[in-house]
Amino acid sequence: MNGIQLAFLVVTLFTAAINVGIATADLAGARFVLANSAEVGVPRFWLPRLAALKLAGAAGLLLGLFDAALRPLGVAAACGLSLLYLGAITFHLRTRVLHNLAFPGFYFATAVASLALTVSS
Image (cartoon, rainbow, N blue to C red; front, side, top):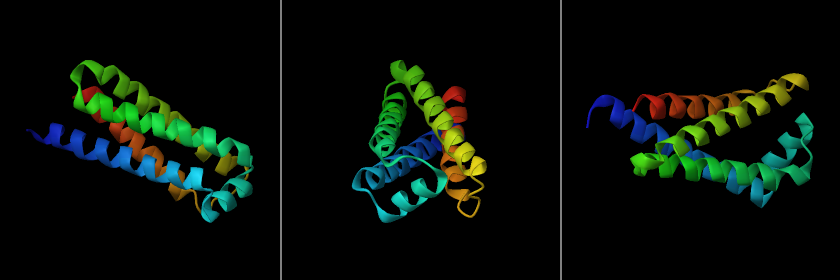
């Protein structure tokens, strides 16, 4: 296993895991999720849908990781997650809620890294 393959494995697993984690927090109605979504103007009824998108993205990343024939699905999942978090960043900027912009920025960065490594592998 070369360096790119190892990075692809580690980053993709990490990205999938953190998306499962935040989707679980969305579905559970965690206090920090409810507070943040209210602050940036995301209606509460969107949270299950956003969680479903995050879980679908994580599943697509994993399928693309473990089956080369499904690699295009991994690319699509990474693109979808990147767009999802770009939207989250946009919501933060639009509402000028900058104190916690690092969180969607971090998720965005992991999705973009997964996309780059999926495409390059």
